[in-house]
Length: 315
Ligand SMILES: CC(C)(COP(=O)(O)OP(=O)(O)OC[C@H]1O[C@@H](n2cnc3c(N)ncnc32)[C@H](O)[C@@H]1OP(=O)(O)O)[C@@H](O)C(=O)NCCC(=O)NCCS
Image (cartoon, rainbow, N blue to C red; front, top):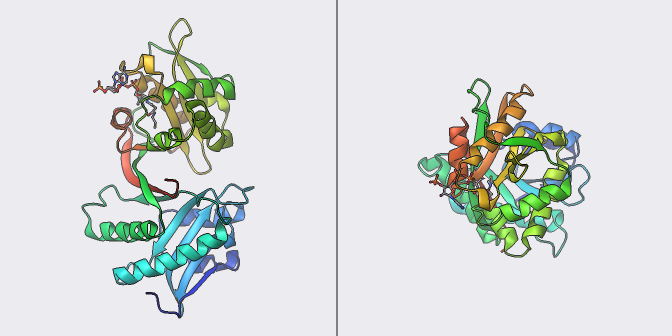
């Protein structure tokens, strides 16, 4: 059990960011700008301290106008603590913070953590990851998925553009949802599968659009529909820029056109569109279990530089 001299509190203001940054994580560099642009709020950044030592921290992220955070993406404990104590401190911190950050009765937002690709083989990385997983499980969250983080780097040869499909812009939200709806059939993507457990395919597609694509500020003519010569749609690719990176946000091949390698044509098109913007890198992610998609990214020159795990309270 944590001793009762533990203090658990949110940051008083942005001036306390240095306290939050006493522990390390790959997103630390984004915190100052996120606070300045209202994507983080001091009341969403929590620390557990004893004397002057920061033993754990937890932080949430949201859009500038969100009242409630959209994701839980910072959670660290001081890994020099004995594991049992680290877990106990983490549980007390996250449980306390959740009571303040999430409205009572609401499902907490999903937790996401970036982890090294070889975390299972590296004993220190594995211990750090498993300590955090133990805390989340004690608080009722369950692992939804492990994902591959992928990156195309400038200097990597561009994949060949399609000579058998044509590409055009997406007409509007309705057209994209009409294409996204059947694409979910047989999907290997865990987030889609989880949505389809409680929503119709059309409602799941609309949710995906409204929660992700609708927020991109990059031009919508980067979203491309692939067609045969006669105009019949084969699939689509969503190239975009999120707050932090140029990304391939999503792609899909309609069920009746699968098995012809069209995924390569879509990915080549999306990669060319973004590379033409002089970007240093393009990011993407796919589930570990989505082997056809992971292979397509590999063929297109993307490298797997990290993994990610998502835990959810929705189960
Ligand atoms: C993943 C996906 C994009 C692959 O597109 P594709 O153009 O069919 O890809 P491929 O032609 O390379 O086929 C990939 C695999 O699909 C399987 N496949 C083949 N024909 C298929 C068919 N008619 N229906 C379903 N799957 C088929 C095969 O296992 C094939 O592997 P193989 O190369 O060993 O034969 C597509 O299945 C899809 O849209 N899935 C749902 C959405 C999704 O997961 N998007 C990616 C999220 S990041």
